[in-house]
Length: 254
Ligand code: SAH
Image 1: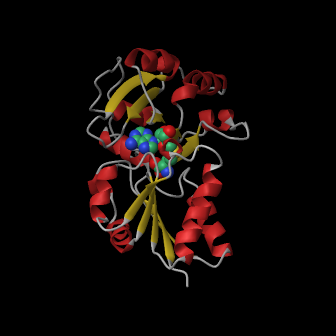
Image 2 (image 1 turned 180 degrees about the horizontal axis):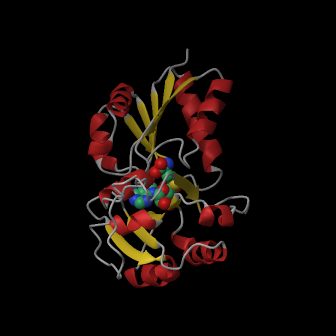
Image 3 (image 1 turned 90 degrees about the vertical axis):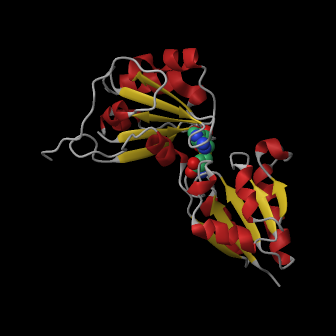
């Protein structure tokens, strides 16, 4: 007998940003495997479940992914309903697709449940519209961190005209700055850096591309944080720290 594994996005932190479907999965779960970036406040929806922390700080430092796979499989094969809770959305830099496929290949039913990804939540928390008529016709989500050292096409990102939302960028700020400048992005492009988006301890820092790593250093920006790079970042309203930036308004003629 084998029950189901829900691969659930827990959103960026604010428990009110959980989906109703995520809440249903939590209510049904016998076992909840919870990642580091998930706000434990969401566990109020699964009072009877066994909760197992599986983040890198949760005690499975070596081969964590294989360990998590085995745990999910073991509980599912015991007939238990498992909820694997991930920060944000399970399929945005979250391995949700890989885990679903791995489980299905072993005959376990897996269902993915969207969560609000940190990049969207961080921008919205500061009133930044990631797309804006006449200003930004699209948005690109990228991670600054790769396991295989493969390079992003920074020139395409710099010149693509979309808002850039960068995950896992705190340790790579100077590289991001250098690459985007080298790719032709304007030095005064607004940059918003949002730490702990949607949580009570959220902080935001507004700067420009040329000054972003210096600003982040003085602000003591820490992970987890999202970078929003592009003209729309000048719309940020909640900024504690801002340099002189033009006021941005939607182009009503578009
Ligand atoms: N699946 C997640 C992303 C996991 S990658 C999602 O969809 O949001 C981890 C990165 O996400 C962090 O390094 C950080 O860049 C970002 N992140 C996650 N939670 C965040 C939060 N509350 N505030 C700001 N950034 C966050």
